[in-house]
Length: 140
Image (cartoon, rainbow, N blue to C red; front, side):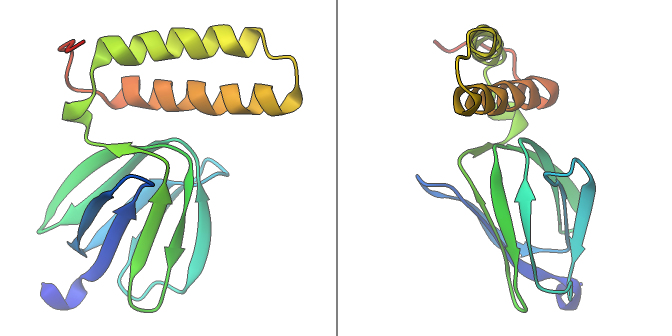
């Protein structure tokens, strides 16, 4: 199976979230379509919207929740650049619910187009985290 894999990394401003050989990657693009990348995919750049992505590694799918970002598919490697990325089991659901409520309130109070767009992104990230969370433990 190793011949059907390709190197993949997820980078955030803080750290390398993931690095390894994978068989496939499915993500949500900015046009809200689901895309899948396999070995040998043509080089491209894609803008990602906040949501979830799925990584196929060693025959098993694993989901992660990503914020906005972009992905570069190169001839030998795929790199995803996002502000944040996390595994569903690491999400504190109560904290995500508070973030969603804050984002909704900020969206209602937006006074400029730029502020409105930033608040839309905040709300989309909070909703993606809630949709995909598996952990309801509050550690605050």
